[in-house]
Image 1 (tube, one colour):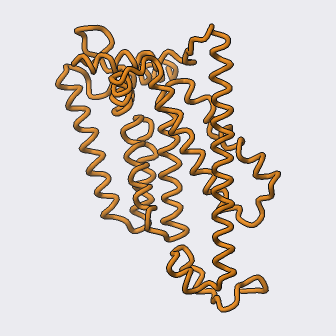
Image 2 (cartoon, rainbow, N blue to C red; image 1 turned 90 degrees about the vertical axis):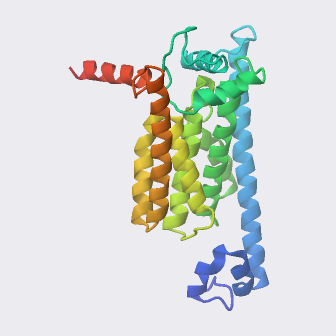
Image 3 (cartoon, rainbow, N blue to C red; image 1 turned 30 degrees about the vertical axis):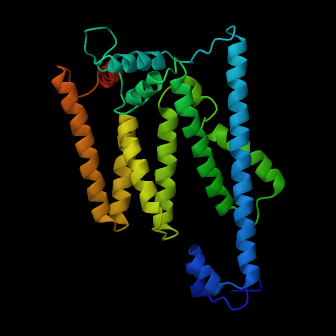
Length: 288
């Protein structure tokens, strides 16, 4: 192992260190203390990254409201369309105008989540209040992954710079202010990719497979654009030998997509939402 190896630890034993029970068997007390110290340092870095993210995001909201006489306004008009759709859902419809069915959302789930926010009297705030926690959670996961990957050589200056940089890298400060489902999409992507890393590199099935499943399902139902990553995750699971799990996810995703398409057809709408069809028409015209 070299001069830095803990006495009594053999090379083949290091694969067992992901299990706390195996760590107690393999590591001497000093080795276990070192692992606990690294874990505490990782948690501290995660807390710092999330705090920096929250402070910067709150400052952006405050600055924006100072320019609009205390009224919070989203940077896009799309969340107001989704809020109108959510209000229609609460009234038993599905569209923008009363008595007229329409499918202006390219998400299966998002408008229903906003409807829950309106149900409890959230006003115009549900898009932001929904996006912000997912954005912070994505930062927490990335910070935890970075702390583990850079363990032993992440100096304090590097940590101080990297904490806020995570939010910039994911556009985590601005995305919640758009009021769209993109922050949930980022969270789902990070969750799925970290889970795949756990399966492929660390060979850690505990929790990793659950993370991949949740991230993949969220990508499928939060944005239709997420289906590209869904296919990649399913292919990765199949290649890693988790064929039954991949097949199960395919079945669930097909069921969810089929149920949504069936709902649209029952309302006299097309299988694909009009927002997707409109984007496709624009892309086709641009190509011509």
